[in-house]
Image (cartoon, rainbow, N blue to C red):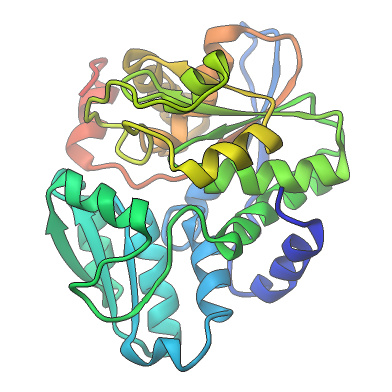
Length: 314
């Protein structure tokens, strides 16, 4: 768990720098659940990642920052670190996998960041090792930096401010920094609320780990859900996730695309694939509860969104 005092301090540090996003009801008369959406897609960069990136960079020693900042990201964390670097007048490099969506790469570059495409295996190595020696700069890990998780945890505090007694909070899972941060805050304030992670079934190592009790590599397929899904868990994150979360679910790509479509048609909310995972799980399971679905981001390529709105899965 991330200490609640660290999360509350992060909230103070980020006040006025990030958007306090709304928690809005989703009217679905055919569903037994009372579903609420935490709209992190409304952040200035279109993703929750701004919270953790800013919280980490603002706490990094000035000597470490002299050469700039560096991260490895499929896109959203890259935007968060680039935003923070621009705020502080620092150079920024983002190592991205070769399948990263052009929408996110263009956004990083608009913010002044430099993108460096590498094969997926090299990108995953940088995340696993928390380093990329080929480029100078302070490495801001997108997931397992406790400062990043504390920043993400501020979402949990906001949820409980607006809805003090939810039964269940569903959170997209990429590497675990978002779900562990939110769960740490929620469990500290309201321990009876259950917090679950959601992954695409094309790469669901956390779901498998909860089922077997141990972390092992799983089959992984690149999909339009580019912000979630992986071949394995980061070792440090499995122990944190097991402590903080009540479990995990995986959902199909078709179910995720249907959730993206429903959000656009019913709520006028644009969500990327990962941003719709939580709602996809709520729709698939049909719980009769009060549920918060975290819409983690909205940075989806227009071509993919067009296909989804036309009724297909990219």
